Length: 511
Image (cartoon, rainbow, N blue to C red):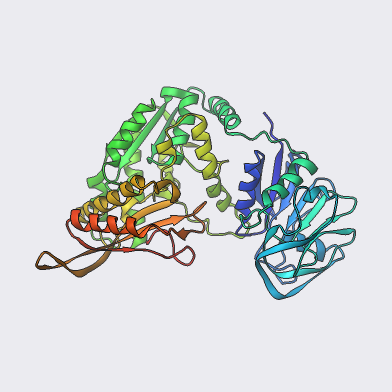
């Protein structure tokens, strides 16, 4: 089935992925491409969205897209930088704003009988994020909406299906942003809403059968959502020709190796569990630098995985749970932070000697879509709702060097924290939670004796994609009970603290 597609041209905005996710929520398939790498098959896209950008159209580093084959021929929505670009280079004027226009604003004027603003009313809250502003509309520009501070908040170009806005409809703070995107894509551009989890499963299974035939495929399961959903799609397509390997690196949560293996077997998957914890801990001995720890884990994982893959005769493919944000980063408009491959996590950056072709069934999906696809295949809610867990596991939650004893301590602490979140019905309200073992001892008192033991930090954050995150305001009673339980039950810990830092500036993990 050929979907109507929407092309999003990325000018480096922090919100570009969010635009794509909002479009996908409308059950419309879209792709992000760098502004300077417009796909050669641009005819297959039914509408185009220009993203925002940290750059200025008045500066030295103007980002110039090749819009000749698009503008006036396809419906186009220009957001923020895109709106300013169209104005500045088409007879309008963009100037530095007297005040940086950032944060919440309200629409004070909306042109009547305008399909673009159907079901959106004056007073609607929008989110601004720009330091330049459009002083004069481009040639053929028609004013559609204003705020108290921004006269030209939205406009269209006569004779074209080209619309431009100086606010961000994709962020939650723009209360009618979803409606605006719906008006543009469904009503104006007439894009069909046929991108559903069910259609994705059907098309992907069919595509995998065609791509793989009778070949054998090996997949490294992590216990997480992405690799589990990838496994189920492949299992539907090729059954017993899929060989899953679940490696215990000794850095998983308490009892996770056994629990997850049992769960996978219940799903009918062909899974082999490999306990290589001693091999990993040996390679980590004496390492305290986070990057060296990551590299050691990545190297040993590939060695263990390669040993196991060689035991399967005639395996030709390696399956990975790569998802769309990883793909976007690798071709980001600005080079971005994407050059580093998470080798231990997705078995990315595999050495040449493995000689396997790669298949990535989820590479078109965002994380929330992966969960919806899993749900449409009736996968266990408990598995689909699992918090993200870092590839290097507890190694980057134990600050400094690792020992078996430190891993034991943190597994016990983590288990109490996570179990209590579930018991208090807080687990599903948190995006990610975990505990950190700090490389400091502090004085305490237990009974009549002074102790000199470890300090642990608990961390719980809210997020949609991990790019930004806020700490969760957990109830004091919950923290009190959890702290008491940890100190009373986990030998070696006498102090518990709660991390109240947001990202940015702090990261979610401590290492």
